[in-house]
Figure (cartoon, rainbow over the protein chains, first blue to last red):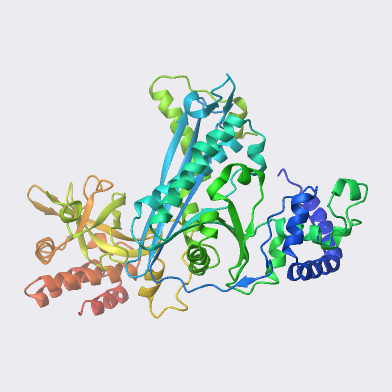
Length: 400
Length: 200
């Protein structure tokens, strides 16, 4: 009853009409950007990147950024590992402060002895020692809720992936898949104080990546993060540097007063990386490797510096991120390419291991309601006060 | 010390996962290995006997329907080999109509006071148990009470299996036919249809 569908419809019509009018310009920009990618001078772009002043994160370019690689044949026997997490955040309408993470583990084995392992483990976090991050050098603390609980989940998922990899110790080729980006932190964590970054990166992310790297030193294991329908613009934005007439690039100084659309680099602007590569990669092919220059990666990731490639899986253009120890090992890099394609083929367009990990981790609306009741029952059984906000109560018992 | 696998009783079909006074559902341990239509099954705990009236194999998550995956595969077995998760995401269930239970002095051919417990183990009865239970046919109204033609298919399948367990199958089928005729005397079309199905 709350949403005026007719009001939404007229606004959507205006949006579609606006997009339609821009199609021809968009196509022209895309064609010029593809041309730029094919003729790009990587050294010049990298030079402009390191010396210029501009607002966008741009990756380091490989020598031949338009190169494309066909997949190798996947090994007949292999394992695909994936984990995922779902969470119930701290809810002030509940009578007790707690959060729940449900972390799934999936192992699929293909070849002579096919097998599957699908499970998930719930972890309840209660009390200040589990729910708050404390600065060892001061009295400051940060409650683990919202985005921070999301980061906690990402770290736990990676630790579960390392555990799964360590449990599967033989020479079978293995693909360890992360859902989403390997750069877990992005702008989110930049906003938090140093001790929070240290807790998540130094004590969470890096040890898990170290464990995965250690497994990869003993057996063929490729770690890869898979991003479906990526919205990244790093490669496309680097082409703006290529067409920029100023050297060194300085956006504010030269173009700060110009409207969007009037700047010289707008001739290749407003594009997504996946649009570019959809025109240069055939089904099954991957792009050349680009290297992330994100400040978090450069500052903290060390041996696990992130590189990425785009992959035409047939149904869509995916972005695949790999740590340096996969990027620099041609066997592991080829393994990630061929096995992700095989996973997408089996999963009808999306890696089946990631899909099953999601299905195992998901906490449904029904589960959330059950959890709330279980919390209340556990307190009531011990004669502890059970209360909720009037707001939550009125939402549950809607009346006329 | 025996391993859990060795301790597992291979004749065990599965466990009761839903139960009411008239029927129960068994979740089978192995995918696609249910019990044929008309099989006599029994639970442990209170020993309750029931006849399989339906076997289903479906996704464990009603929101996820299986999709066709075998276009490039030589046979359906290859579909399972190349998608090993399917074995964990599908399940076979058996629904059985309760026809009796074991008391202190043998079988009672009427409903027990309580249905089996959830997680009671269920097995298919062997020929001897089948023969013992079908010495009398007082349970037949429980089988025939369902909607035809399915109830008649189940009854006929059960009686064919029971006949095979008796040394004099012909006499058993004759007696069973007479009892069915008595119960369905007011519906000759249904009776004729069922009797035609009694021949093995």
